[in-house]
Image 1 (tube, rainbow, N blue to C red):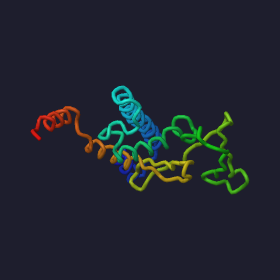
Image 2 (image 1 turned 30 degrees about the vertical axis):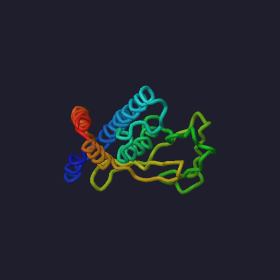
Image 3 (image 1 turned 90 degrees about the vertical axis):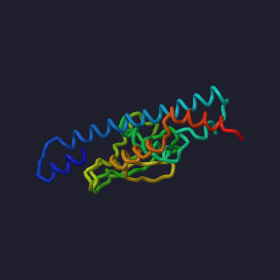
Image 4 (image 1 turned 180 degrees about the vertical axis):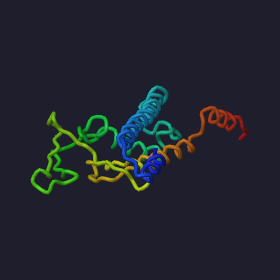
Length: 184
């Protein structure tokens, strides 16, 4: 998508490309989040069934990889604002947040209060295109508190790198069986 955007921009094309790119990027984020969430959930369920409630269940599980945890954290920050227009993990907010409208109007309406108890609360994440033509979002983490920009293409590259770190199941079982069969 990003490469196609660069081509359209070079030809000064103006159409609904950004709208569709944003829509597809948001759909991609939600789908990737759900895939990663399912991996983590299944590993946790397996650990509870086979090892009891040990929080350090499977040391070589995918969800224990540092790269997995970093990617999943970014997806968590993106999913709630995209899917529900709420701040991620707002159930853990201690008090209402004073936030600033972006882009600013330059008046008193720039100050916005986000209260988890207000049923009409909304958080529309600032978004745009990076220099590479990728959709990027300004994710806000109220627990730190901080915000940072997350670039879709960079996130995609991190997902591909994570896939390279994961040992395929059949190969893993074969390796473990070979290690077990080795004389000591």
